Image (cartoon, rainbow, N blue to C red; front, side, top):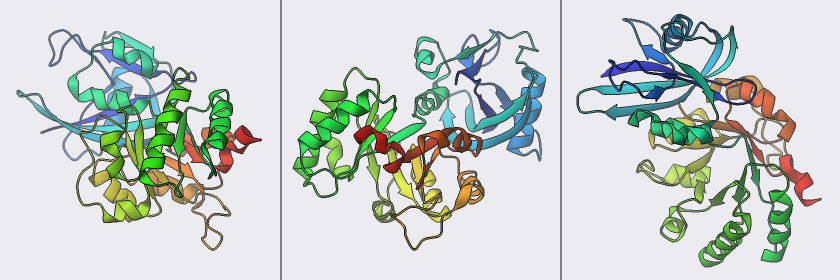
Length: 313
């Protein structure tokens, strides 16, 4: 199997750098994320720095694991070791004559990429801000929250209403989806996989750390996004092994939800997030203004209830 280091490089507009493969190469004339195969005894980070310097002329200063993807093209098997670059120097240029371009993830569906890249494109459309609902007594309260949320600029909403029955949660989720259509925000429901058969495919499912602990089978190869909550390296490792699309890691900072638990802090969060090839969100004591530091620490973004409390003021 060909082991390939792949770089996700973003500019200040959150556009991602892509390059056009030479016509006479494998998967020629298709767009790809820059990178290349590992040399003997070379680490992924070393290969990433070397390939990006040679191909694009950028010097990578910091990068974190994002996702690993195995794919069989029939004539070739590849392992894409995808890393998120958070710090780099230089100006991008196709140093080997290849065409390069900065693209917004949502625009990538209009370009042709190798099949192995399709999951990367889906994950790049994960939001950097995920609001989690406080508990509401009735749907009109949630409805008022949704109206404010749609105007807030937040990119994803996790409906977390643990007091509802299975049927009530389904009903609230369907009605919430109808209200949010057209605002381009991702909707996720905090619940069990028993919801999956009844939910529209565009609604994601989020599992608690307790549900993750019980799970023994892979959640991969689904059309919807599936995430989970984690509090340790062991839980993150299990989430990675079972094919989750993302994880929330908490608590990063002090929060009333975990009064007796010491917060991870950014250094520990960075260490744990870098230990898995999985998009990891910072949760616990987060503010929306923490997105910038979270991304520099290798996070996919921030999540929380308090981070978005102004939505319901």
